[in-house]
Length: 129
Image 1 (tube, rainbow, N blue to C red):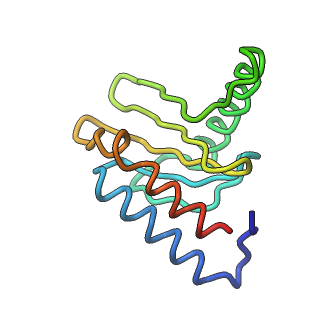
Image 2: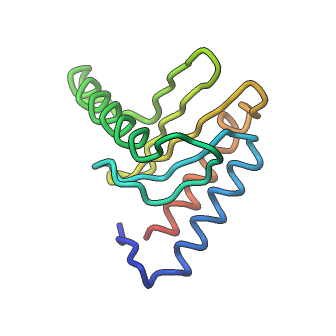
């Protein structure tokens, strides 16, 4: 995976566009793209308290789920879903080094997650290459 650097404005703009489109189409509270170590790559969110803390916690959940999957016969983690009182958090693996977080609320289009999320993941992968 290519690491984005400050000079990679074209790639950053493309990622920003993908995340904006995903958030808009899904009517999500927010979307975040992060590295597996918890470093935030990009986000599209309004009024979120602490994006860095959320991303760090989700990275820990992903690492834990990956370890759990290994104990279950070397299966692979594709997505993790946490249903909270008022929101749902989807953690989706993009590649071995990055993952996507989608925060859904009662007004979100959850069909987008089921039907079209893989299309967005492929767009993100091609931008990160």
